[in-house]
Length: 89
Image (tube, rainbow, N blue to C red; front, side):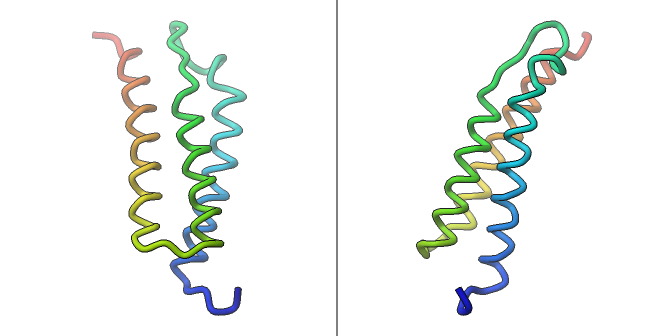
């Protein structure tokens, strides 16, 4: 643990934040989504990112931060697309 770089610790913090965000999202998205367009897939993608972050912290993998960024970006895209459906035209 003491030979971990600052980037590894930041990725761990991002994984913890993703875990908290996923739990909050999954618990509140049904009530928060307007017009009944609720989808729990972004929450599960965030959980996948959190799990990947925790695994990559324990087992060093080359380009692990890039993989985490791609997973988190996919979750953000899913949320934005879900919200876009609800915007009035």
